[in-house]
Length: 150
Image 1 (tube, rainbow, N blue to C red):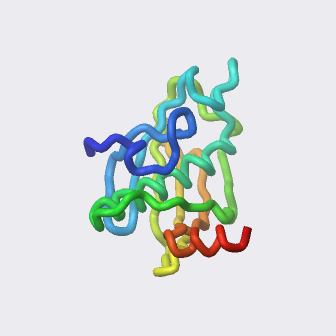
Image 2: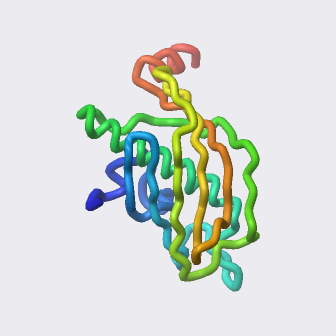
Image 3: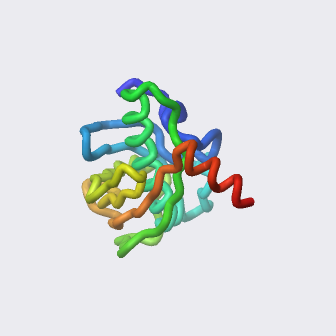
């Protein structure tokens, strides 16, 4: 797909950890992320810590939601990562110069914006991390109610 990933996310600049969309369907998305020295979490001699995979998974989900928003002619909504279940990695680091693929498949979702996605990070033909990510999209009405409570 030839869409600038930052157009789909509420993130900007170095906070964007994924590079491009590889595949997209109604219930799943696969994105890529390159691990290079300019990555904001890069550690010389190691690469990027595998725990950063949680945020990459969440951004893949956000990109999927952003594409849905585009189809509905609306801006990307803000969202929150509520939690993760069973984040498991087979490596402590994502290696420098590796090209990762992040798959997010919707397990369930509700009109309220609450969803859970089964996610995987792949690199060099191997599964490097897996998790179930729980997110909530915040619509304008919910955002207004939160502001009133402050």
